[in-house]
Image (tube, rainbow, N blue to C red):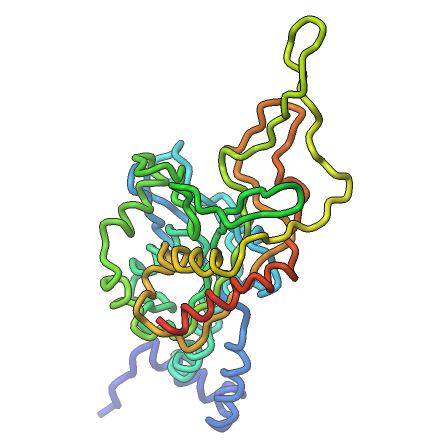
Length: 344
Protein backbone atom coordinates (compact mmCIF):
# COMPACT_ATOMS: atom_id res chain seq x y z
CA UNK A 1 0.00 0.00 0.00
CA UNK A 2 1.28 3.52 -0.73
CA UNK A 3 2.33 5.54 2.28
CA UNK A 4 -0.09 8.30 3.40
CA UNK A 5 0.82 11.60 1.89
CA UNK A 6 1.99 14.26 4.29
CA UNK A 7 0.25 17.60 4.59
CA UNK A 8 1.40 20.12 2.02
CA UNK A 9 2.62 22.72 4.52
CA UNK A 10 4.48 20.24 6.69
CA UNK A 11 6.02 18.56 3.64
CA UNK A 12 7.30 21.87 2.29
CA UNK A 13 8.82 22.84 5.65
CA UNK A 14 10.62 19.52 5.99
CA UNK A 15 11.94 19.88 2.46
CA UNK A 16 13.21 23.40 3.22
CA UNK A 17 14.83 22.22 6.46
CA UNK A 18 16.68 19.45 4.63
CA UNK A 19 17.89 21.69 1.79
CA UNK A 20 18.68 24.85 3.80
CA UNK A 21 22.39 25.32 4.66
CA UNK A 22 21.34 27.44 7.63
CA UNK A 23 19.05 24.85 9.19
CA UNK A 24 21.55 22.07 8.54
CA UNK A 25 24.06 23.67 10.93
CA UNK A 26 24.59 22.37 14.43
CA UNK A 27 21.97 23.54 17.00
CA UNK A 28 24.66 25.37 18.99
CA UNK A 29 25.69 27.38 15.95
CA UNK A 30 22.08 28.16 15.06
CA UNK A 31 21.52 29.35 18.63
CA UNK A 32 24.39 31.82 18.24
CA UNK A 33 22.89 33.07 14.96
CA UNK A 34 19.41 33.56 16.45
CA UNK A 35 20.91 35.40 19.42
CA UNK A 36 22.82 37.76 17.10
CA UNK A 37 19.70 38.33 15.01
CA UNK A 38 17.48 39.32 17.94
CA UNK A 39 20.08 41.64 19.54
CA UNK A 40 18.28 44.47 17.83
CA UNK A 41 17.14 48.03 18.49
CA UNK A 42 13.88 48.55 20.38
CA UNK A 43 10.80 47.66 18.35
CA UNK A 44 8.39 50.57 17.97
CA UNK A 45 4.73 49.59 17.63
CA UNK A 46 2.73 51.81 15.26
CA UNK A 47 -1.03 52.12 14.88
CA UNK A 48 -2.17 51.40 11.31
CA UNK A 49 -5.96 51.69 11.57
CA UNK A 50 -8.33 53.16 14.16
CA UNK A 51 -11.99 52.87 14.99
CA UNK A 52 -14.26 55.90 14.85
CA UNK A 53 -16.03 57.54 17.77
CA UNK A 54 -15.18 57.34 21.43
CA UNK A 55 -13.25 55.54 22.66
CA UNK A 56 -10.79 55.30 19.76
CA UNK A 57 -8.95 51.98 19.45
CA UNK A 58 -6.15 50.86 17.16
CA UNK A 59 -7.41 48.05 14.94
CA UNK A 60 -4.01 46.87 13.74
CA UNK A 61 -0.35 47.42 14.51
CA UNK A 62 2.83 47.63 12.51
CA UNK A 63 6.39 47.59 13.82
CA UNK A 64 9.75 49.07 12.95
CA UNK A 65 13.20 49.28 14.52
CA UNK A 66 13.92 52.35 16.60
CA UNK A 67 17.58 53.35 17.12
CA UNK A 68 18.18 54.15 20.81
CA UNK A 69 19.88 57.45 19.89
CA UNK A 70 16.86 58.76 17.97
CA UNK A 71 14.96 61.62 19.68
CA UNK A 72 11.33 61.18 20.80
CA UNK A 73 10.27 63.38 17.87
CA UNK A 74 11.34 60.52 15.59
CA UNK A 75 8.62 58.35 17.11
CA UNK A 76 5.97 61.00 16.49
CA UNK A 77 7.00 61.31 12.83
CA UNK A 78 6.54 57.58 12.28
CA UNK A 79 3.10 57.42 13.90
CA UNK A 80 -0.18 57.78 12.07
CA UNK A 81 -2.54 59.27 14.64
CA UNK A 82 -6.31 58.86 14.45
CA UNK A 83 -8.46 61.41 12.67
CA UNK A 84 -12.07 62.31 13.41
CA UNK A 85 -12.95 62.91 9.73
CA UNK A 86 -13.41 59.34 8.55
CA UNK A 87 -15.36 56.41 9.93
CA UNK A 88 -12.40 54.04 9.89
CA UNK A 89 -9.07 55.82 9.89
CA UNK A 90 -6.40 53.94 7.98
CA UNK A 91 -2.86 55.10 7.47
CA UNK A 92 -1.89 56.42 4.04
CA UNK A 93 1.80 56.10 4.83
CA UNK A 94 3.73 53.18 3.33
CA UNK A 95 4.08 50.21 5.61
CA UNK A 96 7.23 50.35 7.70
CA UNK A 97 9.66 47.43 7.43
CA UNK A 98 8.92 44.71 9.98
CA UNK A 99 12.02 43.73 11.98
CA UNK A 100 10.51 40.37 12.99
CA UNK A 101 9.35 39.14 9.60
CA UNK A 102 12.25 36.67 9.38
CA UNK A 103 10.63 34.63 12.15
CA UNK A 104 7.82 33.63 9.79
CA UNK A 105 10.24 32.13 7.27
CA UNK A 106 10.09 28.65 8.72
CA UNK A 107 8.39 26.94 11.65
CA UNK A 108 11.68 25.52 12.89
CA UNK A 109 13.23 29.00 12.93
CA UNK A 110 10.25 30.37 14.85
CA UNK A 111 10.33 27.52 17.38
CA UNK A 112 14.07 27.80 18.03
CA UNK A 113 14.33 31.61 18.08
CA UNK A 114 11.14 32.44 19.98
CA UNK A 115 12.55 32.05 23.49
CA UNK A 116 15.72 33.94 22.55
CA UNK A 117 13.61 36.71 21.02
CA UNK A 118 11.61 37.41 24.17
CA UNK A 119 14.74 37.27 26.31
CA UNK A 120 16.41 40.14 24.41
CA UNK A 121 13.60 42.07 22.70
CA UNK A 122 12.44 45.50 23.92
CA UNK A 123 9.05 46.81 22.74
CA UNK A 124 8.60 50.58 22.65
CA UNK A 125 5.32 52.49 23.12
CA UNK A 126 4.64 56.18 22.51
CA UNK A 127 0.94 56.50 23.30
CA UNK A 128 -2.06 54.84 24.84
CA UNK A 129 -3.48 53.65 21.50
CA UNK A 130 -0.66 51.25 20.65
CA UNK A 131 -0.33 50.10 24.26
CA UNK A 132 -4.01 49.15 24.42
CA UNK A 133 -3.84 47.44 21.03
CA UNK A 134 -1.06 45.18 22.32
CA UNK A 135 -3.62 43.26 24.41
CA UNK A 136 -6.05 42.95 21.50
CA UNK A 137 -3.71 41.29 19.00
CA UNK A 138 -4.77 37.95 17.47
CA UNK A 139 -3.12 34.71 18.56
CA UNK A 140 -1.19 34.61 15.28
CA UNK A 141 0.72 37.77 16.24
CA UNK A 142 4.45 37.35 16.89
CA UNK A 143 4.42 39.70 19.91
CA UNK A 144 2.61 38.20 22.91
CA UNK A 145 2.18 40.44 26.01
CA UNK A 146 2.54 37.58 28.49
CA UNK A 147 6.07 36.81 27.23
CA UNK A 148 7.50 40.33 27.10
CA UNK A 149 10.40 40.97 29.46
CA UNK A 150 11.45 44.50 28.47
CA UNK A 151 9.25 47.54 27.80
CA UNK A 152 10.19 51.06 26.73
CA UNK A 153 8.07 54.23 26.89
CA UNK A 154 8.22 57.75 25.51
CA UNK A 155 7.03 60.12 28.25
CA UNK A 156 6.56 63.87 28.65
CA UNK A 157 7.70 66.01 31.55
CA UNK A 158 6.17 69.50 31.81
CA UNK A 159 8.37 72.37 33.01
CA UNK A 160 7.82 76.00 34.02
CA UNK A 161 10.02 78.95 33.13
CA UNK A 162 11.97 80.40 36.05
CA UNK A 163 13.59 83.80 35.62
CA UNK A 164 15.65 83.99 32.43
CA UNK A 165 17.80 80.90 32.14
CA UNK A 166 16.18 78.46 34.55
CA UNK A 167 13.26 76.04 34.72
CA UNK A 168 11.24 74.23 37.38
CA UNK A 169 9.43 70.89 37.30
CA UNK A 170 5.81 71.85 36.89
CA UNK A 171 3.49 70.93 39.74
CA UNK A 172 0.56 73.11 38.73
CA UNK A 173 -2.91 71.58 39.32
CA UNK A 174 -4.20 69.53 36.38
CA UNK A 175 -0.83 69.19 34.65
CA UNK A 176 -0.54 65.82 32.89
CA UNK A 177 2.97 64.38 32.90
CA UNK A 178 3.79 60.98 31.45
CA UNK A 179 1.49 60.17 28.55
CA UNK A 180 -0.59 62.97 27.08
CA UNK A 181 -4.25 62.73 28.04
CA UNK A 182 -5.57 65.05 25.38
CA UNK A 183 -6.58 68.42 26.78
CA UNK A 184 -5.35 67.72 30.29
CA UNK A 185 -8.16 69.73 31.87
CA UNK A 186 -10.22 67.20 33.79
CA UNK A 187 -12.32 64.52 32.12
CA UNK A 188 -13.00 65.41 28.49
CA UNK A 189 -15.41 63.52 26.21
CA UNK A 190 -13.54 64.06 22.94
CA UNK A 191 -12.43 60.79 21.26
CA UNK A 192 -8.74 61.29 22.08
CA UNK A 193 -9.21 62.05 25.76
CA UNK A 194 -11.91 59.44 26.21
CA UNK A 195 -9.63 56.74 24.80
CA UNK A 196 -7.18 57.39 27.63
CA UNK A 197 -9.86 57.71 30.28
CA UNK A 198 -11.67 54.55 29.25
CA UNK A 199 -8.43 52.56 29.08
CA UNK A 200 -6.92 53.39 32.44
CA UNK A 201 -9.19 55.36 34.75
CA UNK A 202 -11.92 52.71 34.70
CA UNK A 203 -9.52 49.77 34.69
CA UNK A 204 -7.50 48.07 37.38
CA UNK A 205 -3.72 48.16 37.68
CA UNK A 206 -3.78 44.48 38.60
CA UNK A 207 -5.70 43.66 35.42
CA UNK A 208 -2.96 45.22 33.28
CA UNK A 209 -0.10 43.63 35.22
CA UNK A 210 -1.75 40.20 35.00
CA UNK A 211 -1.29 40.51 31.24
CA UNK A 212 2.40 41.43 31.63
CA UNK A 213 3.69 38.87 34.14
CA UNK A 214 7.20 38.54 32.67
CA UNK A 215 8.20 42.23 32.54
CA UNK A 216 11.50 42.78 34.33
CA UNK A 217 13.06 45.71 32.45
CA UNK A 218 11.69 49.23 32.12
CA UNK A 219 13.31 51.86 29.89
CA UNK A 220 12.06 55.46 29.77
CA UNK A 221 12.76 58.11 27.15
CA UNK A 222 11.59 61.43 28.56
CA UNK A 223 11.29 64.75 26.74
CA UNK A 224 10.45 68.21 28.12
CA UNK A 225 7.41 70.30 27.23
CA UNK A 226 6.46 73.85 28.20
CA UNK A 227 3.40 74.33 30.41
CA UNK A 228 0.18 75.48 28.85
CA UNK A 229 -0.82 79.01 29.89
CA UNK A 230 2.69 80.26 30.56
CA UNK A 231 3.56 81.94 27.25
CA UNK A 232 5.63 85.10 27.07
CA UNK A 233 3.80 88.25 28.13
CA UNK A 234 5.17 91.69 27.42
CA UNK A 235 5.49 93.73 30.64
CA UNK A 236 3.67 97.09 30.78
CA UNK A 237 6.32 99.84 30.99
CA UNK A 238 4.15 102.93 30.56
CA UNK A 239 1.88 104.72 28.11
CA UNK A 240 2.24 106.37 24.74
CA UNK A 241 1.28 110.02 24.16
CA UNK A 242 -2.13 108.91 22.88
CA UNK A 243 -2.79 107.00 26.11
CA UNK A 244 -2.30 103.50 24.71
CA UNK A 245 -0.45 100.97 26.84
CA UNK A 246 3.25 100.73 26.14
CA UNK A 247 4.84 97.31 26.56
CA UNK A 248 8.50 96.42 26.80
CA UNK A 249 10.52 93.94 24.79
CA UNK A 250 10.67 90.24 25.56
CA UNK A 251 13.85 88.54 26.63
CA UNK A 252 14.85 86.71 23.46
CA UNK A 253 18.64 86.11 23.39
CA UNK A 254 20.27 85.44 20.04
CA UNK A 255 22.31 82.46 21.32
CA UNK A 256 20.51 81.35 24.52
CA UNK A 257 22.33 79.26 27.07
CA UNK A 258 20.79 75.94 28.18
CA UNK A 259 18.13 76.19 30.88
CA UNK A 260 19.25 75.19 34.36
CA UNK A 261 17.08 73.19 36.79
CA UNK A 262 16.60 75.37 39.90
CA UNK A 263 14.61 72.86 42.03
CA UNK A 264 16.29 71.60 45.19
CA UNK A 265 16.70 67.90 46.00
CA UNK A 266 13.67 67.72 48.29
CA UNK A 267 11.42 69.16 45.57
CA UNK A 268 12.81 66.70 43.02
CA UNK A 269 12.17 63.72 45.32
CA UNK A 270 8.57 64.78 45.89
CA UNK A 271 8.04 65.39 42.19
CA UNK A 272 9.40 61.95 41.25
CA UNK A 273 7.02 60.33 43.73
CA UNK A 274 4.07 61.98 41.98
CA UNK A 275 5.51 61.41 38.49
CA UNK A 276 5.91 57.65 39.03
CA UNK A 277 2.30 57.47 40.20
CA UNK A 278 0.98 58.61 36.81
CA UNK A 279 0.20 56.55 33.72
CA UNK A 280 1.78 54.50 32.36
CA UNK A 281 4.30 54.11 35.22
CA UNK A 282 1.45 53.54 37.66
CA UNK A 283 0.83 50.04 36.32
CA UNK A 284 4.26 48.94 37.62
CA UNK A 285 3.57 50.08 41.16
CA UNK A 286 4.40 47.33 43.62
CA UNK A 287 6.61 45.40 41.23
CA UNK A 288 10.39 45.65 41.48
CA UNK A 289 12.16 45.87 38.15
CA UNK A 290 15.49 44.14 37.61
CA UNK A 291 16.60 46.89 35.20
CA UNK A 292 15.46 50.51 35.12
CA UNK A 293 16.99 52.99 32.67
CA UNK A 294 16.04 56.67 32.20
CA UNK A 295 17.20 58.76 29.25
CA UNK A 296 16.29 62.47 29.02
CA UNK A 297 16.13 64.27 25.68
CA UNK A 298 17.70 67.66 26.44
CA UNK A 299 17.98 68.97 22.87
CA UNK A 300 14.96 71.20 22.37
CA UNK A 301 11.78 71.62 24.39
CA UNK A 302 8.49 70.40 22.97
CA UNK A 303 6.13 73.34 22.52
CA UNK A 304 2.53 73.00 23.65
CA UNK A 305 0.50 74.32 20.67
CA UNK A 306 -2.14 75.68 23.07
CA UNK A 307 0.47 77.97 24.59
CA UNK A 308 -0.17 81.01 22.41
CA UNK A 309 1.36 84.42 23.01
CA UNK A 310 -0.90 87.50 23.07
CA UNK A 311 1.10 89.30 20.38
CA UNK A 312 1.46 87.63 16.93
CA UNK A 313 5.15 88.53 16.64
CA UNK A 314 6.03 87.00 20.02
CA UNK A 315 7.04 83.42 20.65
CA UNK A 316 6.92 81.09 23.63
CA UNK A 317 9.76 81.14 26.13
CA UNK A 318 10.65 77.55 25.22
CA UNK A 319 11.46 78.29 21.57
CA UNK A 320 15.12 77.67 20.77
CA UNK A 321 16.02 76.61 24.32
CA UNK A 322 17.74 73.42 25.46
CA UNK A 323 18.13 71.81 28.88
CA UNK A 324 21.44 71.91 30.72
CA UNK A 325 22.56 68.28 31.13
CA UNK A 326 24.90 68.96 34.03
CA UNK A 327 22.25 70.66 36.18
CA UNK A 328 19.80 67.87 35.35
CA UNK A 329 22.25 65.26 36.60
CA UNK A 330 23.03 67.28 39.71
CA UNK A 331 19.32 67.58 40.51
CA UNK A 332 19.19 63.80 41.04
CA UNK A 333 15.99 63.24 39.06
CA UNK A 334 17.46 60.40 36.98
CA UNK A 335 18.70 58.54 40.06
CA UNK A 336 15.41 59.08 41.90
CA UNK A 337 13.30 57.67 39.05
CA UNK A 338 15.54 54.64 38.60
CA UNK A 339 15.67 54.04 42.35
CA UNK A 340 11.90 54.21 42.66
CA UNK A 341 11.44 51.76 39.77
CA UNK A 342 13.90 49.31 41.33
CA UNK A 343 12.73 49.64 44.95
CA UNK A 344 8.99 49.32 44.37
